[in-house]
Length: 102
Image 1 (cartoon, rainbow, N blue to C red):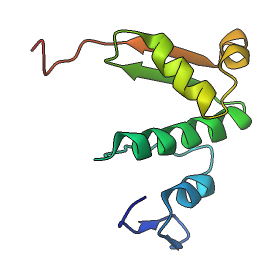
Image 2: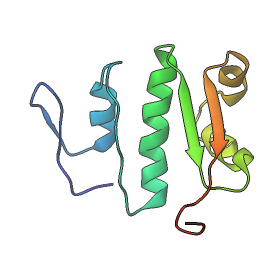
Image 3: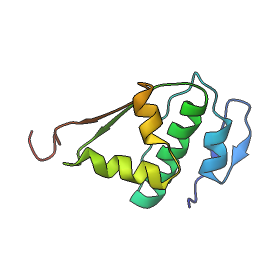
């Protein structure tokens, strides 16, 4: 998935970004840059799912015109979107693409 090495607060090194994501505790945030959109979504959704399992909220912003597409992708990645929406833990917002509309 990646040629990068990830290091957590305990100085443990990971070649697999998903294993690295699984080590993060509740007080951590990430900024993710990726070249492969499919791999990037997999990492995003693992981070989000891990947060939901800890009872955390998620605010997901996207430039996609249809936020249902994001929900569909989350469901396909085993995230119970309906439940997390109902519990108020998931909010998905469309934001303007500043590259297209400066």
